[in-house]
Length: 76
Image 1 (cartoon, rainbow, N blue to C red):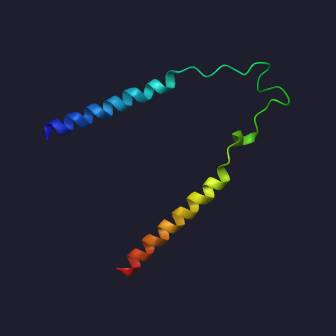
Image 2 (cartoon, rainbow, N blue to C red):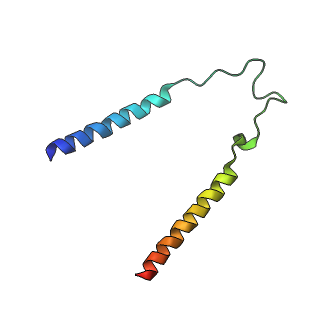
Image 3 (tube, rainbow, N blue to C red):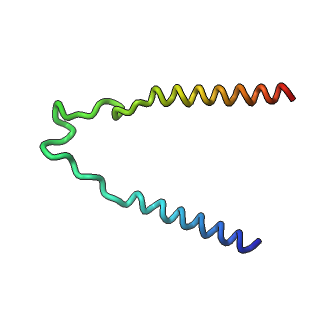
C-alpha cells in the first residue's frame, strides 16, 4: 500500500514539474512584412475560431445526457 502511495505521489510531482516546462518557450516571431497592427493584416475579431457550432453540439449532448439521467431516476 505504501508503494502505491509513493508511486502516485511521484507521478503527480512529475506532471507538475513537466507542466511548467511548456510555459517557458518564447512566442513565435512576427510575420515578415509588417505586424498585426497594419490595415489589411489584422486578425478577425475573436480569432476566427468557429465556436458556435461546437457549442451547439455540446449543448445538445448535455441536454441528451441530462434527459437520460432524469429518465433513469424517474424509472427507478
